[in-house]
Image (tube, rainbow, N blue to C red):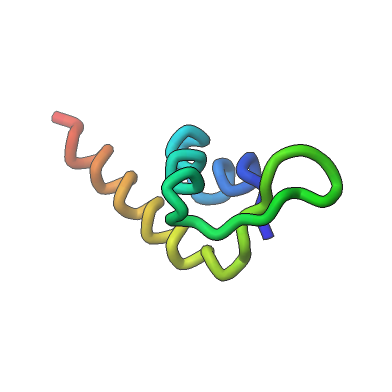
Length: 64
């Protein structure tokens, strides 16, 4: 399981994008029982990896 901060660092996805996907119910999360915030399920790893690849390709393609 990943916190949003961990997912941001591991998958290089902006925090705002992660929260947008959480709000749109595109990522399954649970409330953090040990503090504030949410925890992203490990089952979402393939989705996070795919999102990371898409954002990386979009960034790479946008450079001239």
